[in-house]
Amino acid sequence: MYHKIAQARKKSGLTQEQLAELTHVTVRTIQRIENGQSVPRAFTLKALATALGTTVQELAGPVNDGSFDPEKDRHFLQVLCLSCFGYLVIPFVHFLVPAYLLKKSTSKNPKAIVFGRRLVRQQLYWAAGLSILMMLVLVYNILATNFFNKPFLLSYLWIFFGMYFAKVFLIAANLRQVKNMDLNPQSPQKA
Image (tube, rainbow, N blue to C red; front, side, top):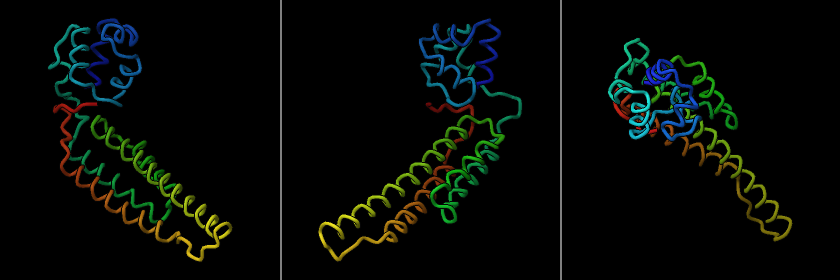
């Protein structure tokens, strides 16, 4: 779809700034739509079609350039989800593995790209959460021993393994979502 929008804009002789002004959206939104980073909402797509002198069906219709293969995209997303098990080997920077795979991906399906970016962000948040929890345990243990003379200290292993098991469920949920996801670029999806 984003190829069609960019082509229609260029055919109309409009710049991204002019199109943004005509449709009352930001230039950044136009850039993200044309780069395939975002799928326009229905009202944005209607405004784009009106500004470009075409129909919504024309802009949202299938692109027959062979660039979309839903089964190939589904397989890629499953591999991307499974790459998140890298946390078993490199727990604090494991998000680099799915980020690298996403960057090297040849998929042009906006739905797959959006899901992949969300997955990488999710991995980054998990790593940050693990680090924060470990720091909180350290602070508690320091305070408990130095200021309150408490013999009970929290174990880092409980936090570590608790987060690891939570991660397994998170990966399983993502795999289930990929299995049920409609990767057909013709079907609507909100950005």
